[in-house]
Image (cartoon, rainbow, N blue to C red; front, side, top):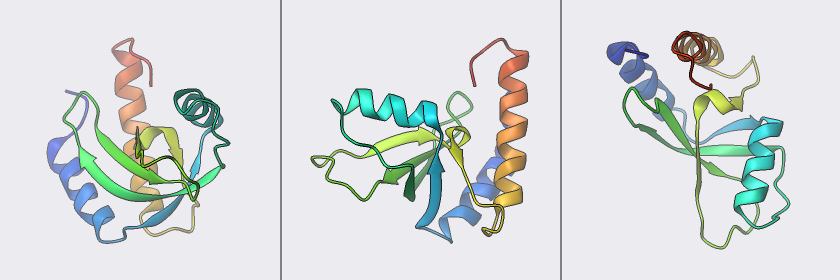
Length: 112
């Protein structure tokens, strides 16, 4: 088991209370979104507008608003691929979740 289901559900509930909230896209995520969108100029910052828990396999997944015309597409990514300002509410809780999930995935030999 990668996630503690109770802790993940609690974090998800807390995060939903703060929707939407700002995020910084990691460079690898920006490159992937650019490729998936056919070369769209993807900004380094966006907003998390949706949150879902997709089970132990995918963890907490965020729907992103990027402030650009995406042709009606919504981009989703694991919260582990996003960066957050340390002054943001729940930043510590997010960082703890990201660290724990990354460590568990690496132990299983899976990419983070």
